[in-house]
View 1 (tube, rainbow, N blue to C red):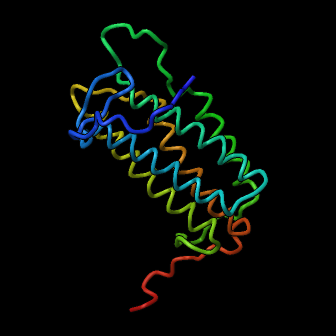
View 2 (view 1 turned 30 degrees about the horizontal axis):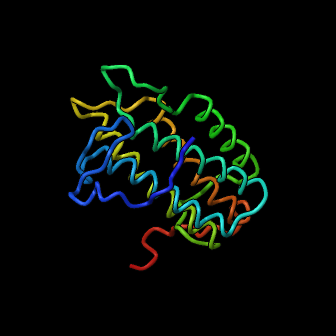
Length: 190
């Protein structure tokens, strides 16, 4: 159970922050940047939800909870020594749920004949913003995983990759199942 009774601690005034295992890292550290960008993705989805209802809103609510799990996963690097608690990790069932949700939404949307420009409805535009922030989080996680002294779980990487796919399909759902998509017209302004 999380208990927050004091919001400021002053421990970060020197430009460091604590990971879940107690390690202190620079706020500019790639791991911190990665889970911070996951948090930014979550905030974008919170804005999206101002414009959604029903099934799509329920899916987005579950994703917001997952993104806190993902942040906890990324904030707890693997430790050579046992931790006094079981670290929270993204698991395959969370990725599987995203795939089922993508398939469910995509089943009623016609195939694309062009790339989609971000826009159409407010929800769709906000979903595209969330998708681009999610893609940045994924790039950071891949960079973190490539560092010799760092590890990112394969399920965390899969989740981020699948989430950006979900957000794209959800953006089309929010555009009247693709009917209000704004399509790219190559070279239209030459």
